[in-house]
Image (cartoon, rainbow, N blue to C red):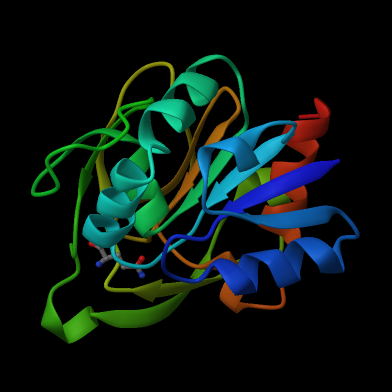
Length: 191
Ligand code: GLN
């Protein structure tokens, strides 16, 4: 199994390290030809405007959109989630492959960065440590989207649509590997 991690900008090295811990081949992706032969792709957190711009400049955006629409499993975390969305409040050109509406920098100054113990039924009983950094939230999820986790106040922070997985937080910054394993199970067709 070979997983690519978009390495234009942001927390890509951490995702690569987590995937290697799970003993899969994980490679950085900076150019369209590096998408060939991948079984899955991670779009990391960072700054969605920068990642989006670099993705377009390097002709990756259209390629990733087409592949995601044709069944390539994609995990988008934080800025990566913004890029998967169909619609966002301020970022004009997301890839629009998931039927979610996302609000950027949604938690305001007081809660710019925080950690929350998340209840995620698909991962089992033990809460998942959610690390939120200037995080977005999912404002709306259409019928085809499965909500995987909400904060105590009901805000959606994790969702899945087919083989696409969107997380508002940073699982690569914790040593809990369950979300990466869950994604690999999607890639392998077990989930
Ligand atoms: N605030 C960033 C954005 O809007 C996302 C932050 C992150 O990825 N940690 O793109």
